[in-house]
Image (tube, helix red, strand yellow):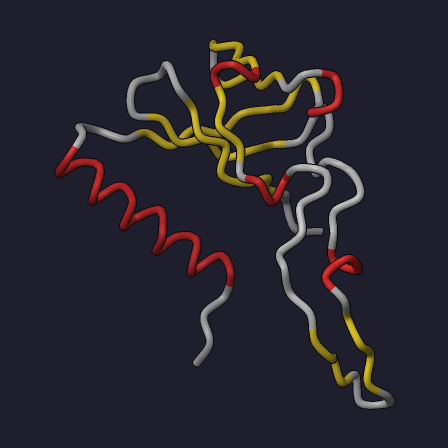
Length: 121
């Protein structure tokens, strides 16, 4: 049975934590809130810490211009739709003020912004 994105991401984070504990010391996951978007200069509030772009490595899938380099044909049942790489390019940054994000850190100095999270409707 195929796994959901949430299940796969959970497995990945668990594996990353296990590897880092064995090689580099403890790893911490944190939830932050974007206080300034990418176009204005990324800033994230994480607990009592105010992070700036200098503190953060960001998942490239969240950046404007990101393209997963995929192409092909989608069959929607009525007619096939051809998809080119350019069709899948992100035309604007995925992060905006107020967005919640998941961060990973090993030393509370450098943070890795893994993804944006949302509450289901």
